[in-house]
Length: 372
Length: 218
Image (tube, rainbow over all chains, first blue to last red; front, side, top):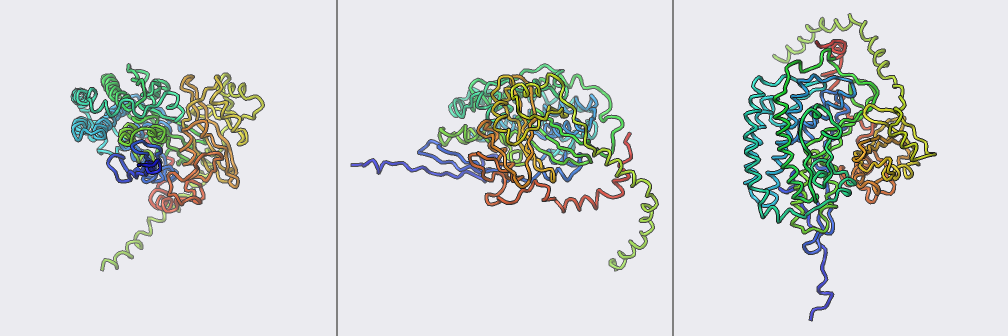
C-alpha cells in the first residue's frame, strides 16, 4: 500500500552552464523542475562583463569604435553604425552619400550573416547535428570574405568612422557582392527546404515559449523577437535612419510569437535584407567617403544624444552624455540581447525542461552583447 | 655595452626637447576654447505640440521641467513624483508609452546621480526621455519594474553600477557583478580607470595631441 506521502514529488534544481554548448557563450541558468516541468528559472549573467561603458569614458570618440565590435560580435557593422550615428548626431557631422550606401550594404549583409548563424545554431539546438550549421556556414563564409576584403579583418572590423568609413571599398566590391548574392539565395533555399517543413523542427518549436504582443512590449523585447509576436515594429521603417526610406522592403511578422515564428521571421528577414542590398548596390554613387573639413580631433558640445539601429537581434542603441571635450562623459549601450534575455523566465516557466534549450536558442543571444 | 649606449641617447636627444618650450603661444588658447565649448547650452523649450504638452495635460499640478534634447524631448521630474508620473505615462491614452527602451544611471559627481528613463510608444511613434536627480547620500528611487517588466534587469544593472536603490523592486540582487559585490559601484566617477588614463597620457596626450588639435584634415 502506497501512502500519499511516499508519492510526494520533490523539486529538483538543474544547473546548466556556464560551460554548456547550448548556452551560446558563457551563461548559466539554474532550472527548478517539478518532474519534467520547469517551475523556475534563474539566469546568471555577467561572466563576459568587461566594463565597456566605463572603458569608453576614457577613450576619445574614434578609439571606442573598436569596442563596439566586441559587444555583439555577430553583427559588428550594425553596432558600429549605431555608435557612429550617435557621435555624428552629437557633433553634427554630415555623412557623404557614398559612405551611407557602403554602410547600409555592409549592415544588411551583416544581418544576413548573423541570421545565418542563428539558423545554423538553431538546427543544432533542436537536434539536426551539423547539417543546418554547415549549410549556413558555407554561405556565411562567402559574405564573410567580402567583409574581410573591405575591412581587412574577419571579425573585428572597425571599419566605420564618425563621418563615414575609414577607407573606400575595393574596386571590385560591387562585382563581388553581385557574385555572392545568388549563392546566398540558393543557400537560403537549401536551409528552407531542410528546416521549415521539417517534422522534428515543427514538433520541437511550434507553440513553445510563446509571447503575446502585449507581454513582448512590456518585457521590452525588440527585433525579430518582437516581430514574431505580431508587432510590426522595425526602426528601419518606423524611425528611418541612414537611407532606408529609399528602398522597398517589407517587415515580416509572426502570428503566435512562439519559437517557430521567431525562426520564420528571421528566415524571411534574410530575403528582405538581400532585396535591400540588391537595390542599394545598383545605386552606389561615386564621391567622397568622408565629409570635407573633417576635424582631426572630434570635440563634442555639452549635450545628450541617443541613436539606435535595428540590429540583427533588436534595437541596438547608444546613449551619450557629453560634457564637452573629446570623450563621452557617460556612454550607455542599450543592447538587444540583454533586454531579450531578461524575458527568459517568462518564456520558459511551464514548459518541459527539454524545451528550455529551444527557447534559449530562439532568443539568439550573444553573451558579449548581454554583459557588455 | 648596450646598457652604456642607452644613457647616451637621451643626452643627445636633449635638443629636440627644447622646441615645445619655444611654442608657448598655443597652450593659452586651448583652455579658452575648452571653456567656450564646455559652457552649458541654453535649454531650449520643446516645440509647441510636442509630447511635453501631452504630459502637461495628463499630469496637471506636477512639476515638469521640459526641454528639447538632440534626439528627443527631455523632461526632468522630481523623485517623489515618479509613482505619480510613470503609471500615467504608460496608461494614459494620449501618452501610451508602453515600451521602456532603456533605463540607466549617470553619475554627475557634485550634482548628484541621475536616473534616465527612455520611453517609447509603438502605436503613436513618439518618444520621451524622463530624468530624475538623486543625491549621492540618499540614492533611492521608486522602482518601475511593476509597470514595465523590462525595467527588472535594467534596475538591477543600475544598482550594480551606481548603487542606486530601487525601492519596491522584487529581487534587487547583483546581476552583472559577483553576488558578494554589494558595496563597490564601478561606474561611479570616484572609481576612475587610472592606469588607462596614464597610458593615454604617455602615448596619446601631450604635445602631439595639442598640435593635432588645431589642424584640420582636408
